[in-house]
Amino acid sequence: MNTEDAIWTALEEVIDPEIGVNIVDLGLVYEVEVEDQGHAKIDMTLTIPGCPLADDIVKNVKEAVTAVPGIQEVDVSLVWEPKWSPARMNDRAREEIRARQRLM
Image (cartoon, rainbow, N blue to C red; front, side):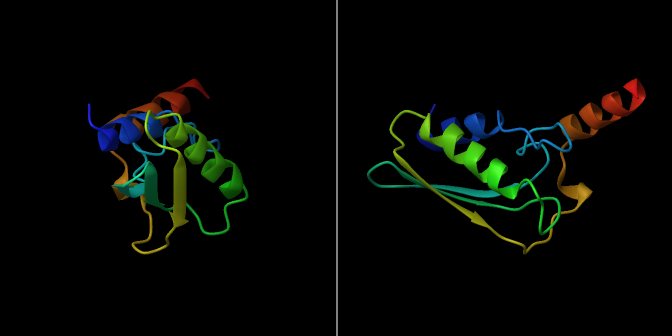
């Protein structure tokens, strides 16, 4: 597995605490870029601007990505264009959300 793929896999472990689904399946991660010397750049968004858990999510992203072998530094940029919408979620995220709603 190359480093970029390993980063995407690591990001699948980062859960949006309000929704309970990982940020990749939610479509919150827009771009992953690996630069020389163990530096990764992540462009991502949140479900809403001003999310009260933004700092926690960014911290979790940095921790997950720095755990990837060869990555020592991570820059996370929160971007708001394109705006996130539920249409960005994949089918797995939709199924997880439906399953949680059925349990309520």
